[in-house]
Length: 117
Length: 234
Image 1: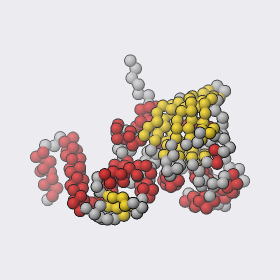
Image 2: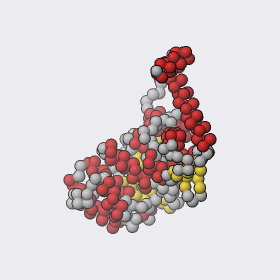
Image 3: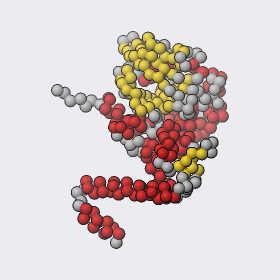
């Protein structure tokens, strides 16, 4: 994975794992790699890897079972909410880009309909 | 773990290190940055106990570095340091004689990952192969402090990836890793703390994720800010 070096790396790895959770690549209840393994898998600093799990846990997306490891949440409602959060973020990025290009809301909407056809 | 207190090193006509105070913590990976001649190598040599400071102190667990600390600190210098008659295997045995924490099995597996063979003569190694062999002997030690001076220099892209992995495999809660490199991008994701050295002094110690979060800057961006010549003349 290539990182954008000026954005927090924990956040970029967290986003990658969130995408895995939403797409089912990492299904509910799936065991996540340990902190060390995660660091090696993404070639990142071990403290950064630990932060990824802290943040995922804070967001209610995974849970650490003492002595067993970290697991993807089995809360389907939470995963559906995550899908919407990720979609909203993508939509916001898209709209920002369109705004930079100077498109009006009507033009953006027309563009989207045209892509659908 | 390792601490330098207002450490100074003067050579005949120049001051290489001009009062660096820094305390390294276990569990961290430090990137030591600065242009040529800023004092990084001299600092590392003092930390390794190879040269004596002119003034100030270099302490390992509160005691000045020396023969005792060398058992716990492993250092890779920029210059090659094997006898030309040695094979890669000989170099391993040589290290094993010196250091109790040297693991021959991990050395041999590191050689293999670096695509080197124990029977290769050091004299016939290319500079890139020599660089990889230096990494292998240094990381085959189970030390507490790893000082790697320019571990990515002269090494091709794929081997650099391999070196990053082996450094991360070695990193741990009780270990301190210190890397110096001009290849700043190689260290962005694996380091957590940057030490910017300028004119023999510590210009800044920066937490890299904080730098990204608070200022939207990469380590390379901050490097340009610190060393770049962007001052506007009044």
